[in-house]
Image (cartoon, rainbow over all chains, first blue to last red; front, side, top):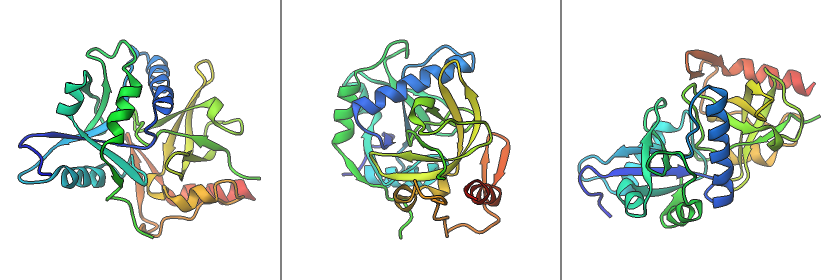
Length: 134
Length: 117
């Protein structure tokens, strides 16, 4: 499926379950507190705008290759900022590293619906195209 | 004796390039500078990591993860004395650069062997 022009394509690597993402939100909050920041209740993902006639998968592949120095795994889930917005989630750009976002509510002060987020990450999951072979 | 195994989220990285783990998700006590195996059970992958910092009060550790060594083979051998099948893509000159700190992977390799001895 071709991506719409200027679509912000979002990928997440494992884990994808609501239970595991609950732990991830906890770690985000604890590490923010440890660093003297206001706690941000969000789930880490990576995103980048599509280019030209790229399909969602092609954009996701380019993104996965770009981030593999600091994130990755055997599988990835693909979604878009629009899909997340349509279901009540917001993307918050948290760089560095480039293209790193937290998905959560509008201001990251409450835990988002992680079961709903897990359902989104179930819809379009693939072997990681950036993963080395062999 | 195997290296400590610590579960991580494969997406989690902070502004310093570190990945946060819960101390309760480690199967052995962690100390700063310790080489560990960072694994993710849903995807069944694992990689070498070094403990950069510990916040005992909050129950978390900050890890430098060697993402180039992340693989299924390392997950399968994560409880072995020397669990890591090192990444053949990389030359000995490959570096993992994180937040201004450069970690030479050969240093990590030597540390793994030393820990296992």
